[in-house]
Image (cartoon, rainbow, N blue to C red; front, side, top):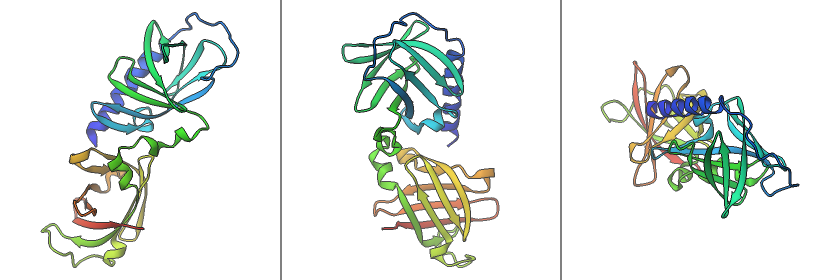
Amino acid sequence: MKSKKVLSFIVVVAMFLTVSMLTACGGGETGGSTPYDGKWIAVSAEALGMQMSAEEAFENGFTFEVNGSKKVKLFVDGEEGKGTWEEKDGKFILKVEGEEMEGTPGENTIIFENMMEMGLKVVFAKEGTDAMNPENYLPEEEKAALGTWNSTKALNALDEPADDLPVGVAEAFKLELKGDHTANVVLFGEDLGTMPWSYLGSLGGSLEVPEDKYTIMFEFTEDGSLKTSVSNSDMYYTFICSKAE
């Protein structure tokens, strides 16, 4: 949705401006290996009550590395910065340009509830662990939506059965929702490729179709079906879809 695009852009710009001014700051003593050694990769973000994948918030990624010292290398949207870290009262404290960000360690995760004091929650997972799976951080409703959905009924703009489909109803629409917030779409037998999807609870969900060829919106019905509208300047259809087993 447009609001999420704007939010993601603001987040990236703010983080870019902050990191571009980073300089190395003290605490460079070494102390051998630590439980935090390794590369930590942002896998999920949330702001203003909207959850998004890390790719939506940080187009070129957000990572930091700990290598047996108190120094930290950060990489935010393609820019490199430096900082330090310490463990205090069971928390992972990341210090950048005098600012302290408190993270809560978990099983191969560190969660910052207020990154850069921007009201941005960011989950970092340790590289090479199961915590990297983006499905781990989806709301339950979104987890239940993952999978392949096939059309079982098609309606026209008047909400009547569509009788002008170029193919049969079963072949008219197919949607595969994935845990990394990407989706594959087949419309009237044409593979539209892979595109991002987002979901905002009662507001429903949407897909970002390349070149804006179609507007695709979806919502879940009480009977467990997926109701999807597909439209452009020439047509409007609603597909009622069931989840493939």
